[in-house]
Image (tube, rainbow, N blue to C red; front, side):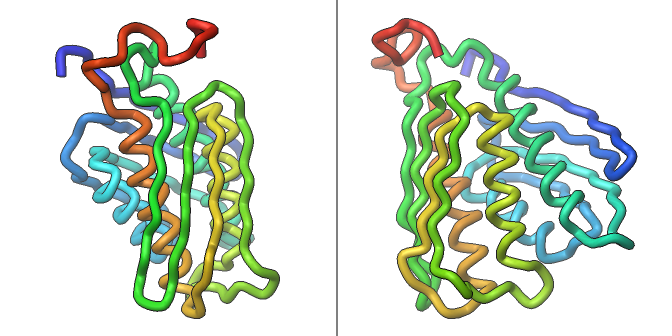
Length: 197
């Protein structure tokens, strides 16, 4: 890869303090510390299956709850990935993944369109993971889509175990984004008839 597709971001608010770096053309190595062990596990899976090298430290107001930590990490990750993508010349742009995990199947589809939108479909009453509310998976995806400026569609097709459901979504997100971010040698310039993304 001749183009350096790396970025670093710091983001500090009254609720969170985040340091993050990513290499889109990595090998899936990660060092993640958010203070929410299950979220660390999810981001490690995201990095591994996306082949993104990800270094992250988030210090958040966990005495309130984990909402700000998870949402703000999604914001910073989206901003960092957007910067690392640069002009988006030569990328595949679209990516998709069907991700099975035992009794669970999730579908994630991505378009790096510069139009932020999240469609998140899961049945009412989808179970939480043991240490993270399922609603925070959607909040993370929304923050990521908004700040990466991507269309992200997530659908839980079926599943019963909260851990498996969350993990299938994070792994699927990593694989779909990996495909969308990849350089395709046959793509010349910006992959859009508008010639801009």
